Structure formats: C-alpha cells, structure tokens
Image (cartoon, rainbow over all chains, first blue to last red; front, side):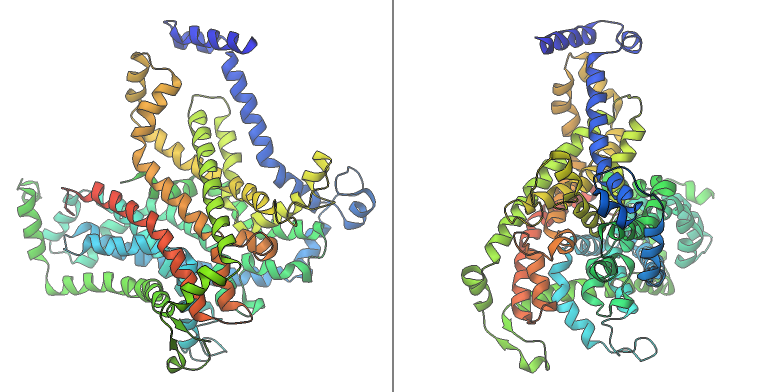
Length: 309
Length: 311
C-alpha cells in the first residue's frame, strides 16, 4: 500500500507544471529511495577495500588472539614495513619502472605515427591498416601466447641485453609485446582524435613547404596533447596492471614487475593475511595515487576510445 | 593564407594534396606506418596465424621445426572428445560471459541514475569506479581476504562457514562477484560519458510528449546510445574470454575455476609442453572472439567511414 502511495505521488509531481520548482523545494520519496540504494551500493563497493586496509593495519598476534573480525589490539604500519623489507619490494617496483616507462612512451610515439598517416592523408589502405590495429588489440592474449612464447625463445639477444641470450625472460621482450599490443588501441583513439583537427591547419603548412614530418611534429602532435595525456595515464595503468605477459614471458621471478611478482611473493614472504593485505595494498599504491591525482585523465582515456566515432 | 581559404570541391582538394607530397614525404610516411605495423604484425598477427598452423601439429617444443609432426585435426578431435577439463572450461566461460552481461546491465543502471542531477553523484561515481584502477590480480588478493574461510569478512558477517573459494560448486560465482566488482565501474563510467554526450533536447522532447522515465529511456536514450552499446558489448565479451588473472591468483584455475584461457596457458608453461594442443585451444578461443570482434569492426568502420572516405 505504501508503495502505491509513493508511486502516485511521484507521478503527480511529474505531471505538475512547475516541475523544477517543486522538485527543489520538496524532498521526493523517489529521490530518498535512490540515495538509500546508492549509499548501500557504495558501502558494499567499499567493504572489500576497507576490510583489506583494516586487516593490514593489525599485527598478526592480535588477529590471532582476537580473530580477524574484531576490534582491539594494536594498529600500525608494521605489516607494511615487514612486507616491504622481507619481500624486497623496491626491486619489483624497479622492474615495473624499467618496463612501464619505455613501453608507454614508445606506444604513444608509434601509435601517433600511424594515426597521423592514416587520418591526415588519403591512402587506399587506411581503413585496412586501422582494422588490423584495432582487431589486433581486441584479441585475447591467450590466442597468441603459444607461438609468441616459442618466438621469444628463438629470437637471440646479445648478452648485454639479456643474460640468457634470448628475447624470452628479458625486459626487452616484455616491452616489445606491450608496445605491439597497446599500439592497437592507441592508434584507434588517436586517429579518431586527429581526424577532428581541421585540415586547414596542415594545409597552410604544406603550402609553406613544410615537410610531412614537420607537420606531424610541430602542428599535429602538439594539438594532440590532451589525448596523449589521457592515453599516457591509461596506458600506464594498463601496463602496470599487466599480470599475464610477465607471468608467461618472464621466467626469473626476481625480474618480474610487481603485479605479477605478487603471486610468487605470497606464500614465500607473505605468510599471513595481514601481510598479504599490506603487500596487495603496496602493490596497488601507484594505481591508487593515479586514482587520486589523475582520475580525470584516466577516465578521459577510457571514454575517448568508446565515445568518439 | 589566401590560397588556403580558396574553396575547392573536397575530392579535388584531396587529389591535389596527394600529388603535392614529395618523394621524401612519402618515404617518411611509409616509415611512420611501416615500423609500428611491422612490430604489431610480427608480434600479434604472425603468432595468431602461428596458432592456427600449429593447431594441426604435434610438437613438444624441443628441437627445431623439423620435429613438428602434422596430424591434421587430431588435436581438435581429442579436445572435443577426451580432454576432461575442456567442456567444463567452456561452460565456465559462458557463465562468465552471462554474468558480466548482468554486471554490464547494472553498470548501465547506475550510470542512468548517477546521470540525474543528484547530490553527491561525483562521490558515488568515484567510489564505484575505484576498483577499475586495480589489476585483476590485486582484485583477486583483496577478495581472497573477503572469502577466507575462518577469517574472511563474508563468513563473519553472515555467520556462515562456507568455503567460498574451495567449494567447486560455488567458487565460480565467488570469482564472478569479484570480477563484477571491477566490471560494473568500468561500464558505468563509459555509459556516463555517453549519456553526457547525448543531446539534452532528446530527453526534453520525450518528457514533453508525456513519456515517463522508463519509456524515455527505452525509446529515446537507449537507442541513441547505440555506438556505445556496441563498444560495451565487445568489451564485455572480450573481457570474459580474456579472464585469467583472477582465477590464476585464486587457485591457478583449477577445481571449478577452469577457463579456456587457463587451459591454453597450462599447455605451454605447465610441466608437459604441448604446443599443438595449446594452439588448438587458442584457435577455439580465437573463433569465439571473432564472433564478437568482426560485427564490431563492421558496425564501427561502416558507420564512421561510409561516405566520408578518409577525407
């Protein structure tokens, strides 16, 4: 009975003429219900994270004595310190840096090359090139992993590049596959973006006798700065979060980037839930920093791929 | 400057531009496309073709190419008939797909609600979006703490003693909830962007015509979101075929969490390296992915290039 009452009332408000005025003055039951629903949803969404943070702040002896689902005992950052020191986490952050920075920069550079060529000039193969890149990026990684794994074992690298002498188990190989795979998505986004830049801008330069390279480097690329910033943020997270490539193409556990190293560390160094929680949060820290500082760029990067076109 | 402003038919302009490129410019452009394309093709498409070729072979991976035996469709026949984990893995992948579509629906619902002029909408959005930033591996670690048998949040809240991740009847659903936790925010944010880009007069017109909220959504808003719906469809499908990290972190994709992607990987990094077998599984994954990828490409490239050429 209450439900029908709400319904009728809401309906009447909609039908009334000065809708906006009425809405702002009166608290509508439908709105209250919506907020209640959203608050519950948000609490459910936060619960796993809050639980992880809470667990990570408590020393193991306290949780052993009181149980994990309890209040009391000590709180502090000792688990973080232990996780950091025991597992030598700085090394894995270093590995991540070695892979992520060159991979993101190269991806953006190469993708903007292709995007420029296919979006600013009319070749017959433009659409075909774009399809190859776009489709390549959509393939599940497991479709290509078997031959890729063999390929990496077969490609020799000089000893100064990798001690084992192959592309397999090397940072070079990991960077190469990230660049090859991510170029697909970035080319797609950047070519959409570049197509919206008026042709008059480059035509003027062309008539002044500027070379194609100059048009790209001096005119188009600077205009793409917003898209490049968004994509850089997005790609940083994508490459940082990679688990699969490093797991399969990197056999030396100590060389793995942090996200994929975590699976090994757990069990060896992270022996209890408190340490696992602290370790997981430490591994997530860079992404959480990006979330807090560059969330807009990240979202823009995500939606650039989805809404244009 | 004056010459630029001169109006000319678009076709003629394009032709003139193409002719004006010097040989050097052409070389530069060829290199700009050539290098990335070579890398992408060598590391993505050559292995794809490699998977197809090797799926008809038996190869232990030791020794050169001359140790490859060509066995026609034997791998496929064995996979379909006597490989125990295959059909369960396929079933799990389909359940994964179905569940992610439900999560997609929820993401869309949240986007529509949060798109209203609502107090605290930014806060709600930020919180629901938070898991999207985390890797699926970390999502796995976080949810293991939630699902932990004696010490986990869930059992303590519910007062139950369920082995969420150990019981092979329910661990798939437990993993799916964790996966959905991340997926919903992803879809929500994409739809929010789409809703913001819609012409507000569309909805106003619907409201003036007396459409209620649901009618206006079904008849006006949802159809107008078509380009995004297509993207979301392909994202959801591919995500569910790619699913790997989460189940690997939970129990390496065993005991109820088998997925086709895990089987592929087991056949190369597992103790027995069966290249041909792994490739055949990869091709099955490829075929299913193409069912979603090809229609997406057709819709996208037809819609965006038809009539427009490349300008």
